[in-house]
Image 1 (cartoon, rainbow, N blue to C red):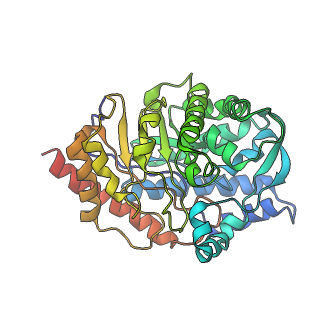
Image 2 (cartoon, rainbow, N blue to C red):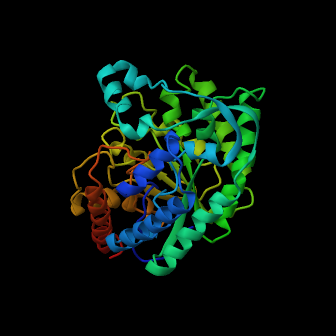
Length: 383
């Protein structure tokens, strides 16, 4: 299976910088301090999506999304869409690398975007409470796409496993029952995205970041068993969607920590291949994972998979030189063939509303560099 475009397509992972006024309004909604005009907030989101899509296309990005403008966080937004989450929210999650470096933990915890997130525990049966939210997201994205005319659209959604990672289970008898209940409820959102013709991106930090967080105390066999369960939940939830319309994102955690406990991709990639999505996005630019391209010289990538390595680092204010981007793309193109790869970003630029750490204008410049580097690599790889 190949991408028959004659060049390297570009995309990204999901979240993009939100306008300041939208950040203020969404924080106010999350705090519940003042009454929120829902119609006005909806209009802000709609306008932000149109501008976000326009800027992606202007930067040269081919497969674009809504920047997650309507979501307070890439995973915890489900509390507003699913019933059953009414318990107390966890304030401090365990990160093995941050436990080793307390000052780094303080830096991460001090980010205002992270302080605002909320993930209440599951205290009752999970079901779809707001069936219109995903539909409205897609109406906004499709309308914006009709104006800016990108090559394609995608929309990201939390995986069953990452929801189970952040939202404690106080209702279901065991982990399997819990994650499969989440999968069945999230199926509505995945299918709502797919119904528009857009690609569904399932965000899966649980498969990688989970190793040094919620699953840090498990031995290797138990960890792999848990990952197998989470992948089975994905496959259950997307059973009605064609594989070519699905993509999944592996993530080791988009936070400025040491990451020295990150699990190697070699320890999980065989399980990742079992997931249904055709396209696999993964971190390949940051200092802990940039070397892992060599793995693909020694393993067989299933013929039905497309790889989208991250060639841009979203935590750094350095704007990658287009030649650096091109070199990173070429490594994968020469190993797998240029028609089996896309070029992406390691993770989102603003995974929580108001997350600070990168200049929003730099984020857009990085996407421009991504497109420029992909064009250089295309000339070389398709020559």
